[in-house]
Amino acid sequence: MAPAVLPSKQQPQPIVVSGPSGSGKSTLLKRLFDAYPNQFGFSVSHTTRFPRAGEEDGIAYNFVSKPDFQKLVAENSFIEHAQFGSNLYGTSIQAVKNVAEQGRTCILDIEMEGVKQVKKTDLNARFVFLQPPSVEVLEKRLRGRGTDKEEAIKERLEQADKEIEYSKTPGVHDQIIVNDDLEKAWEEFREFCVPREKGETDA
Ligand code: ADP
Ligand code: 5GP
Image (cartoon, rainbow, N blue to C red; front, side, top):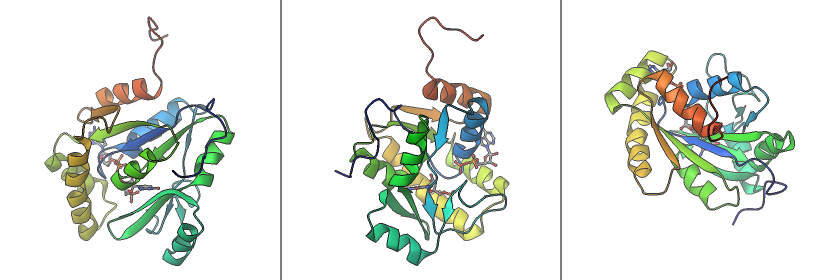
């Protein structure tokens, strides 16, 4: 088991969001952070991929070179790490600690291999999977986003099949949300992240 990353069991349970690239993770997370600015904190991963337009170093990701990433691996700095397409991604112990120290619920946005690794740690997370309505719609959304080259889109679609297959394993995710209509998906996502007390209604 990986080393304990949270100071105590009293910390809010972290939430692991996964789903194929283009399934809407960033879109729903942005809504969540806008709606609840003090309640959640993003686990800022390390990656070797190049920043996209608008992505700030230290906010979207910690952008690092491959040798620097490998050094962090050798130093056991990561809770989990994986290769996705031709790039490396990892959640550092420090990233999760930073959020825990603020007393906020830590949100991890990670792919399938990372999910498997997190399940072997003592992070005690809840897992939610965002599923696209179909692979065809996913492809349209990935292209519509306009951030990835053809090669990267192909890699992401291949990976999507694997992610969707893995999501069917019983018990892997606490909830699966199909992101067809965005408003409906947001309601389900919000309810997962901020469960209402019994009998509570919108103010
Ligand atoms: P991810 O973070 O999972 O890779 P994004 O949040 O970047 O995915 O979403 C991929 C693209 O799909 C974005 O351009 C986003 O605006 C769009 N999108 C997300 N959800 C929906 C939806 N329900 N209907 C239509 N487009 C969507
Ligand atoms: P993107 O390049 O689109 O930002 O992310 C590609 C994939 O890498 C997404 O599925 C995202 O969830 C995943 N990812 C981002 N950060 C991490 C991480 O720290 N660890 C793992 N395993 N996957 C990550």
